[in-house]
Image 1 (cartoon, rainbow, N blue to C red):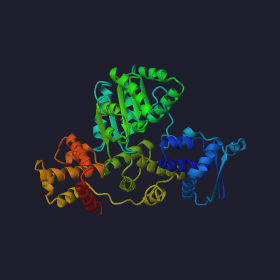
Image 2 (cartoon, one colour; image 1 turned 90 degrees about the horizontal axis):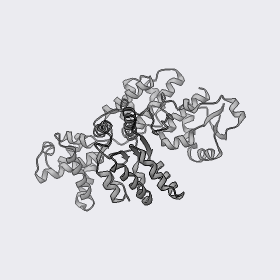
Image 3 (cartoon, one colour; image 1 turned 135 degrees about the vertical axis):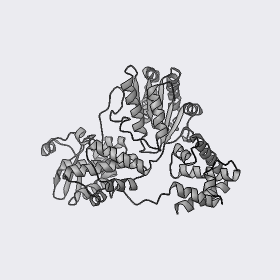
Length: 449
């Protein structure tokens, strides 16, 4: 394995353990500049990165390198020098981070700040995200006319960024005259803070007036920043009143974002709120197959089943596992069997507690309240049935992360707003009712034991 190949395979695994921003910050323009016997020298762009890698990432880097190349026993970090450049021909980071390996795609549209590889065509739709997907399609057809703002929320690595950028890319393609802008909220916060500091806030707010579609990612980071929220409210309100489309993502619904001003919360809740929950097994398999096809490598069903069975809570991690296997397959130029896959992914896949399923939750809740499973799934409005049904919905949502539409279908095709109401009601009741708290604690113990 050459130094370039070894570092490429290492980067593929490191990306899974860091955020895209941290990966780009600390690993851009790094490379293995020396590999001989037991020693590896990693070239870095400056002393700040050197110190950070030594203090924060050394153990991770060493573990991955050791797994890929057992002879490695010592790692040194050096700021790149001219003589080191001659030892190894210069590596193009854009090639290391090629979309074929899915490590990091730096091809960003300067006008929109969007990554063109995020499209609806490579976005896998399942019960866990179908509401968010349908709302996104409606927004693309009529920007600013329906679902404004569109607020999408869900856990880390479930596809929120992909969906938001797909909306932007599709609108940019369909409506040439519309100005589309995608911004991570942290970037917006920095812009607002700098503008206030330099007394240019009016100039910044004015610059947003020409935007037709504003897409904001991770809006939960506005929490606690009162002055920033105040200025953002002006930007939001100005665009909204002009009928401009606003799309927002968060890791939680508006009501659960702490220290958010009431007027902003009200604005966020004034449009369409759609959640993305955890993908089921079949959807995880579909995602793996699609991503494998994109990379031009086919893996056996045995390998795909192994990955899908062990990585359940994060689509980004599913894709990352494929990156590792693809990198190894290309480097070694050979097919991967299940044994090799398990070895390569052992640092990514660790034993996890057995996750329950829908049937078990229904059975345990029904047994606890001494009613039948048929009754809990019925449409009966009797008080002794309604409460257990709502408790079951709450646990399915909070613990198993099923989407509201999925839960609604399982309960006889109810409207998903019925499920939302049930979850909110139980959630509020738990804050003041110790008896209900203890009941749900006992039910959870039975479900997950």
